[in-house]
Amino acid sequence: MADRLTQLEQKIKYCFQDKKLLKQALTHSSYSNEQKINKFSDYERLEFLGDAVLELVSSDFIFREHPEMSEGELTKFRSSIVCEPALAFCARQIGLEQFILLGKGEEMTGGRRRDSIISDVMEAVIGAIYLDSGVEEARAFIGRFILSDLEHKQLFYDAKTILQEAIQKENSGSIRYELVREEGPEHAKNFVVEVMVGDRKAGCGSGHSKKEAEQHAAYEALLRRKIVPAQEEAGKN
Image (cartoon, rainbow, N blue to C red; front, side, top):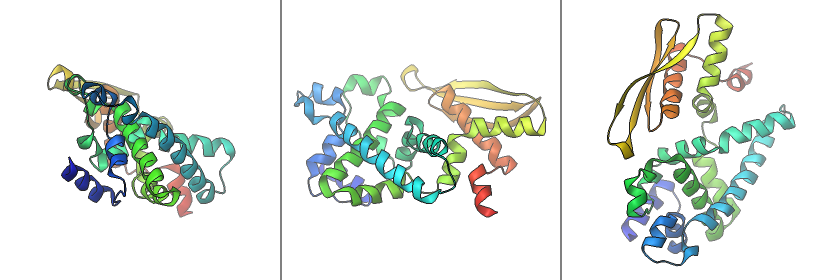
């Protein structure tokens, strides 16, 4: 386990003074119950703390970076950054799901692929870093892995909405998402979806759920069309 923790520390570019905090951040309740560990040794309390730290840091960041935004726009933007799918996306970029400690039952039912668990662990890691070293180290982690490259992340997070608006503006036909195939065992399904604009295939994507596959398909369609988020265009003017 020590080697695994060291490997993750290298990935996140942060070395814990108290390794127990990192292990707790990675421990799902199913694992602690199975191992008969104290119930407060799973990630849930750290997730609670990390959620608050993430909200503060992300709010401060977008407030300073976007003085042109109204309160409502700031709230909407922050929500898109820290929502469950967005955090899971960021966590997967560093392979965080590989390090989660799950009980056998949760593992067998696909818990390691579930956005809700992966995003919770991401917040728990933030909480653990905050307790280990304070807000500035937590801010640095959030900046590296959540608040970086936001323009392209926003394009991915909001792909379906952005594509819908672009097609409506062009009046180039209706959009529909078609499930092409399902792959893998029942507890670890992978879905492949194509997005059609009129009678033409605009993009194809895969994911652990139909919703995720649709998002990837829409994102591919946007990349093909070279569409960028509104705030990126605004920044160029």
